[in-house]
Image 1: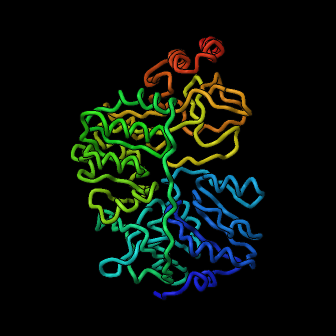
Image 2 (image 1 turned 180 degrees about the horizontal axis):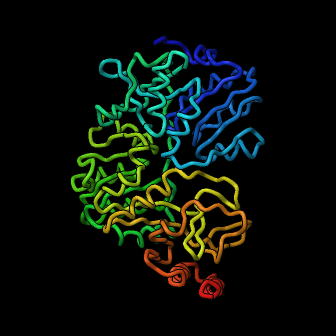
Image 3 (image 1 turned 90 degrees about the vertical axis):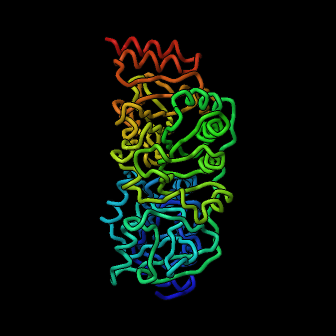
Length: 431
């Protein structure tokens, strides 16, 4: 292991090269900034996802970004004409994709060294853990690790999942003072509050929860924290500020999950600075690779598994569009289908897909429940996986329903201004 500056590490990359980075909170910022100062790139291919900052590197000629999940940064870079391309695949499959790419260089953020010099992977396990270890063991490849005391030391489940790198695996160690990017929850409003209220009735005491970021999960978790009951477990792709607050309210015990009991199991965390400080050294939150956390069979082994995810559009068949708008990439597949399908394997499991009933497009209100998807629409989750759709007007339980019953239930939770129009679509389905 050689200790060097970010500039020195960046100089070890070739003008024609390949680089892989973890998703969002695992991205090493000082190293990326140093790479962005170079202007001699001829063909640099970077595999990453959910950039947390508009790094200059991705505006340089000769640099191509292959992204597994778009956020605001990827969308802005693409709109500005830079070479940003989407790689379709759910989060779990990116472990296999990364192995197939076998990039010459890998880089990640870690916490400051702990006992024995081991370095916690901090806020991200995700899809890159196995490939980081392979890279560190291969003398023909280069593993760059950026350590910052502002990243929390978090735990895995050793010995199988240590969630750490050993000093002997690291080729170049960069010390920085970079802090993880913060991601505050969206401000609540009347619509998200109503959706959360309808979703609450599907969550019993001792449920095992999966939630993401945003106004709806934030509202839901706040209500769970405030109401009587609890004894919840957590098995979630993402650990959020809201889930921290549920812990702080004494509502999480993880004692009745049936698997990984005693621990909230996650694969990455994003939220506020308070969340990152709270995670430091916590024994009751464990970070595991995404191929474990997002495995539908593993998800289904949890008792009373309740999955909460979002959607952009749903048709009367129950087909869900969750990551594109009019066929253009907007976000990513992530763990959407894994948790929808995994939370359908047990008799007491439920999968909730939540969305406002309408949105504004060019100042015109349109329904997000539609008769049929427009040509060119890309389905994220097929109709046969879908359990419950929730809007501010109610919850439509679709499992076991006929095509006609599905259409009727979805029409009933659409915005009242669009129900007559959707009723015509229901008639067409019955022919």
